[in-house]
Length: 382
Image (tube, rainbow, N blue to C red; front, top):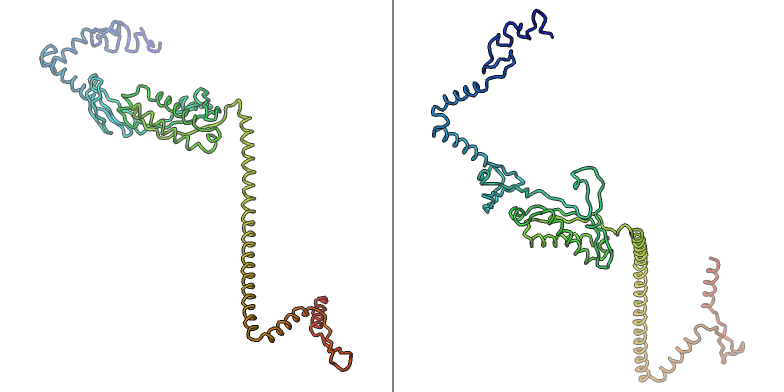
């Protein structure tokens, strides 16, 4: 060994003949001999410790003063163990011999009766708890990376039109009344889960499958939340339901393909209906405009005919009054005006029976016909 370099090898403290050990041949404290391999004297160590305590307490342990000091120290330590802290998101409920003292402590440093007389419960009242129903995700498996798992026993529900739907949803809730939450229900999470599943089944049972998948999602969520809150309030659970959110609503897997075909057919139906609506919106205003135009033309024609008839009647009255005044002149005037109306558009040849020559034919220059011919020729040239 490395410490046996010279004469005798008595260990690292010298030769064996020198007594051995780090104390140079003397016994170590406590009466033992490390060099000789003997154990320390335990009785000597205990005796010296008792001597030191006797010097601190002259009366010794058996005296009344010593017992009182020990009891006092223990009581102080026991009393200090009653201090506790309530965090900002918590509320404290103190129990004395297992009974609540009807007080809810606010955040801060508080004191209660120490154990075993007193106990304190500090539920987190601002924490939003999330509960999945119909499926399980990573949060349900302690944050492990796992794919969501469907729970058919919770998600399959019957709608009002006798169809089966696969509904997955989440419930977000928090503690509203710590005392009711702790003392009125035994298993809060299981209670919320059972009540939420029952409320969702009742609401879905009053909803058609098509509405559940399309337009009624918001209504189903709100109705379920209200019904769930009413159920929990009847239990005195002290729980406030913050939100119910649908995650997946679809037909069961065995009939999903047929259901998708039906949905596509309905989408085509809606598309054709929208196209027909657009055509109607374009044609109906046009037809209404044409109808309004015809009505206006008819009203104008009616007004014109009425005015003309009234004018003819007034003219006849005037002619009748004139006839009563001068019958002969009136008859001749009517005769001339009638001839004018008849012969206005006819070719005319004037014959004067009293003329001396030319067999009564009077030369006539047809200026009107010349003007018509001139107008026609200019139109053909254009």
